[in-house]
Amino acid sequence: MRRLQKLSYFALALLVLASSVLIAQAQPPVTVYKLRNAHGVEAQITNYGGILMSLKVPDRNGKFDDVVLGFNTPEDYMKKNDPYFGAIIGRYGNRIAKGRFKLNGVEYKLAVNNGENHLHGGIKGFDKVVWTGRETRTKDGPAVVLTYLSKDGEEGYPGNLRVTVVYRLTNNNELRIDYSATTDKDTVLNLTHHSYFNFLGEGNGDILNHQVKIDADEFVPTDAGSIPLGTLSKVVGTPFDFLKSTAIGARINDDNEQLKLGNGYDHTFVIRGRAGTLRHAASVYEPTTGRTMEVFTTEPGMQLYTGNFLNGTLTGKSGKPYPRRSGFCLETQHYPDSPNQPSFPTTTLRKGAAYHSTTIYKFGYQK
Ligand code: GLA
Image (cartoon, rainbow, N blue to C red; front, side, top):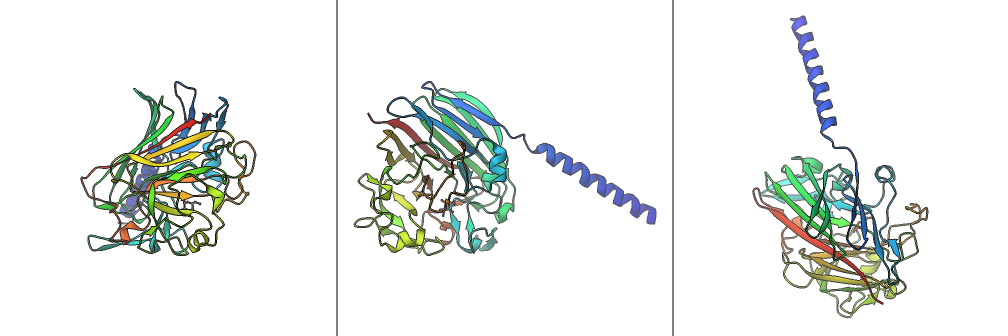
């Protein structure tokens, strides 16, 4: 009997060892893909977190600069506990109140990693996992295809979720991101991309002089924990009115409750037009370099985040620190906390249904 028990312990230990070797092997190696389009625009993307590590675009004099914040190697991103620089965010971009939601009558408890709330997919979100990557050529330009299987229960979410993200650098100077996913159980999903842009070049000061236009008549007001109040506010007559191109810094320190709660802009704008159709969402213009960016998306909303939590402790690619407001994000997404907000567009992904989302960042310059 004792021998039998010993033998079965031995067999169990062998099984554990074999499966951990298999799991270790299943993780693909970390790679950096370099895409270059017909105009010399260059993007570097790693399969660690699906991070856009660098993006070199010309200014009005034809000078190329790297316009996204970040580090030089994937290992730096692993070590430095950075604020999601350039990463793919999932399963849920933005916050879910108290990390809880109900679906089909069942309450799910998610990892809580932002005060009492769940942020950007939890403790180990899609920004911190190794994706399977493959470089490919499309008729529009070079691309990287990233896939990831998020297992049932990961960070508390239901369903085995298969996700594909395609980054394409088109010959129209667009960075096009196509997201798709399927699940084997009903779940919630809200994928986005978290690049911090600075058209002066990363590390070259703050972004307050960048002029931004956002196609939004309304935004999502939040509480002190950045959780939506459940209503939408009109932008008209407030510092959230970007219907006419306005410098980010023009009103950022105004005496406005929402700006104070957000430490600056950290809010979702409700993009005009029909969600699900690819439409213009925002334009950016930087006057010294002439660099421009147009954003198009199929998502209902877009978060403008003005790097309010950067504080100069992180040093970037060219050895320069990243102080407060030295980058801005335009994260195309559903509204925060949608799983708990019945009046918001739904983020439920049903078993067997196909999730699709597209965002385009198109770069240019004005003379
Ligand atoms: C998002 C959030 C911000 C902040 C950053 C990361 O954009 O909305 O509040 O958490 O990510 O620092």
